[in-house]
Image (tube, rainbow, N blue to C red; front, side):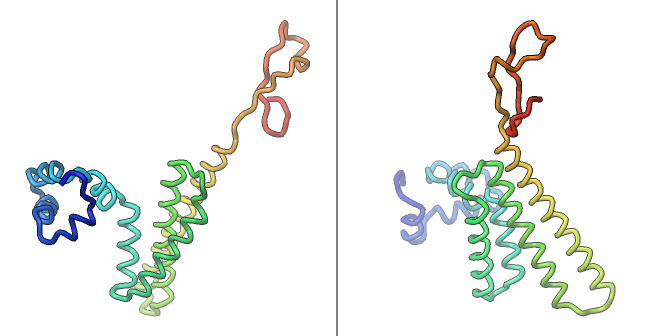
Length: 187
């Protein structure tokens, strides 16, 4: 099994890989070692399926909301894909990508809290608890958006150095470059 893809392995029928996956998931260290030896793509599999916590959180929130409703599930997934396309852009830095994934998780949680509050007109204590969850979800979403805005601002603001030799202070013996902001004023 050196150059087979995961799809080829899945189509091959019952095989030891499925058993190794199950044993590894149950805590068998020997099975994980054997899986790594049998399947060269094991690291990609682990990173893609088990290592992507943002996607796992999003899927957990979607499944908790949608249950067995496939239309609800697919609609939420499509909306997140649209947001990803809007926010990520062609040249997002790795840090921006992490923050954008965080925004997706908090955005989804905040709106699910809104939906839950809108659906429940129960007793006062239950509604008060939902309002508290909603407020905290909104705060987390705001913090994630603010962090992304700060990172984007810091990535676009690169200091320029003015090497114009005519700008010197009278007290200076020599002319030295001055750090100036993008507006052109010296600092």
